[in-house]
Image 1 (cartoon, helix red, strand yellow):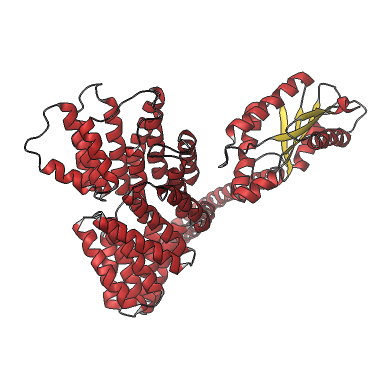
Image 2 (image 1 turned 180 degrees about the horizontal axis):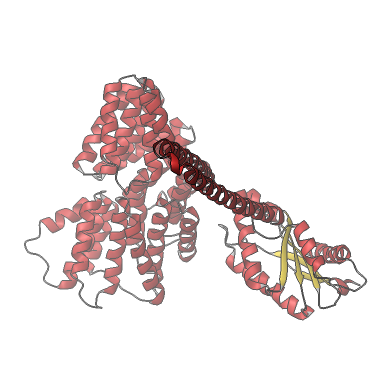
Length: 618
C-alpha cells in the first residue's frame, strides 16, 4: 500500500508540468493555472478556495476545470474516493467532442484514483485511451502523462516489464532539464518499479537521482516528502535503519508543514516499523494507533489493513494474542476481490504464525498452505497443476476401483436374492470390469504417449527459447541431404552478451534471447532451420535460397533486433556477428558449420555487428 503514497507525488509531477513538449497548446484558464501550482505545496488551499466561493462558476469549461482541480487536490491528500467523485462529476459535464483535452486529463485523474483503490482492471483501459488520443493528436506532454499513469498501474499488477517500458518511453520524451518535469523526476517512477521488485539497491539509486533534481532549487515540498519516503523505505529494506530513519523523519516533517496529514501518517507508520525492529515495541504500538486513527478518518481502507498487519505482528511478538487476534480480524474485514495476492499471502502467513503460537498447529498449517499457494511463482503454479492432475488421475483410478467393488458387492447381494441370475450377473460384471480396464488402459496409453511427446520435445528443443538444440538441428538438417549451393549455413553470435547479463541482470539476458528467437521465426523464411547451439550462439540453415536473399534476410534480422529489443540504456543496442557459407557437395555438414564459424569469428575480429561470407575471405 505504500506505493500509493509514492504515486501521489509522481502523478502530481505530471499534471503540473507545462505543455512545453506538446505540438498543440491546451491549458487551464489563467486563474485555475495559478491554483494548480498550489498542488505541490498545499493542496488544501484549492479545497478552501472553491469552498469559499460566493457562487459556482458560470461557464461550463470553468465548471469542468473546477472538478478537475478538486480531483487533483483530493488525490494529493490521498482521498481517492473523493477524487473519484470529482472526476465523475467533471466527465459528466462533457457532453460533446469539445473539451477533449480536459476530458483526458480527468480520465488520468480517475485512473489514478481507481488505482489507489486497487481497481486496476477498471483503471488500465482509461490510460490506454489517453495514450492513444495523445499519440493521434501529437500531444507529447499528455502522452508522457498517460505513459506514467499506465506504468504505475502495470507496476501494481506486477507487470514490471510493461511498467519499465512505459516509464522508459516517458523518460525518452522528457527533457533533460527545464520546466517542471524531466528525466530526473521520472527516475522516481523507475525507482518505484525496482522497490516493488524488492531490488532496494537499484531503487535507492533512482530515488537519489530524483532527490538530486528536487534539491536543485525546486520548491516542491510535497513531491520531495514523497520521494524521501520512498528512499527511506528502500534504505530500511536494505538494513540501513539509521539513514532510513533520518529520511523518513524528514518526509514526515515536510508533510506536516504543508498539512498533508495522510502523508505524515505514511512516514510515521514506517518510523514505527523501525522502532519495532529496534525492540521499541510499545513506542511502535502507540505510533501505529495514532496512524490508524488518521487513516480511519480518511476512509483509507488499504492503509488501515496494513497498519492492522503491523500491530498484529507486534502483538504476536509480545505474545499478546488477544490483541493480535483483534488486529487480524480488522485486516480480514478489509479483504475483498481487489486485494492484491501478495497482501493476502502476507496476511495469511501472519495468521498462521499467530495460530501456531496459540497451539492450533493443524489450522496454522492449513492457513500457511494457503499463503504458500498464493505466493507461488508461475513455474510453481505449473508444478502445482501437474500435481493436481496426478491427484485427479489417482482419485479417478481409486473411484473406479471403488465403483467396481461396489458393483461386485451388489452382484453378490443379488446372487443371494436371485440365485437363478448368478451366472448372468457374473457375466455382466466381467464385461463391465473389462470395459473399465480397457478404458484405463486407453487412458494410460494416451497419457504415456503425451508424456513421451513432451520428453521428446524437451530433448530436441532449447528450454529457454524453444528453438531446436544442436543435436536435433544436426539430425534434422542431415535428413534434408544438403547437396546444393542454394543450401546456406549461417553461424551467428549476439555481441557483448556478457555485458548484458552483467549490466542488466540474467533475467534481462534471458528475455533478450527469447525475443531474438521470436524475431528469427518472424523475419527469416519459413523453409529455414533455426537452432540455439548454446549461450548466445545460433545456427541457421537456408534451403533453396540464393545467398543475396539470405544476406537480405540476415540484415533485416539485424535491423529488427536493434529496433525491437529495448534495454534500459537507450545507448545500448543488441547486435550480432554472423558468418555465412554455401554448402558444397563435397562438404560434410560439420565442415560447412566450421566454415560459417570461421566467417563469424572474422566478423567479430573486424569489430562485430556485421555479416561475413566465407568464400569472400579467400
